[in-house]
Length: 253
Image (cartoon, rainbow, N blue to C red; front, side, top):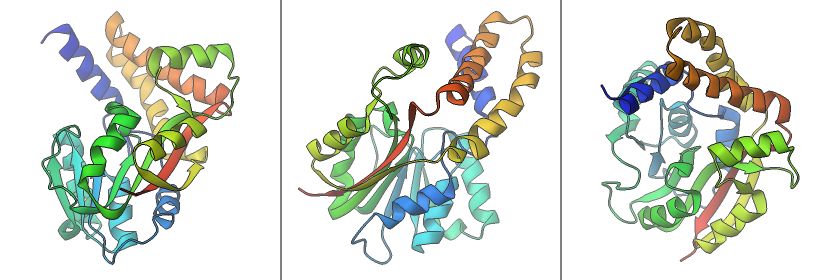
């Protein structure tokens, strides 16, 4: 195994077994659903970058619909399969292992496209532009994206995100991107702080002591763990400066 593959496996060990792969909560998912005006009953839903799929299950329940859930990592899809069966939703979840940048789905075949914390992988604006092709006329798109919440963040947290996510912008800039991609902006809101901690940073932080022990003496692997620790520390100390924003838009062209 080469160094890149080994360190990726360390990263996966850090993330493995978490309820979510990023900030989110069922309440915020449902709040975003409520902004999706004009959906048919039931809608055809595509969840892109679904991870272990907590929001997938919430969507299937709230909209009483089938959801096509896409992720590139089979182990996350296996977790979703198990969760769907346990929740009695196995017949409502179609699981698709695919790259979000090359989706094997038909044009204009979905009424709602969902992406919680995953659009950044392609780039926020690039993803919104590309995914519009899969929306039926008048269909909705809901995405959550990391944003600055104040124009003058402290230098330490600004430097951290300059290293880790230099494409991060503020809410108004991203609203402009939504409109520039051809969507009517239907609404937006900031995820509450508990959406960061309950199912993501809380369980993640609890794993770190065991990971430090597991990788004792492996400086590169411990560096991956240290980056995670630093990310959590940024949130704890500077959480008022940035957040995840849900953006909901409707296809307007």
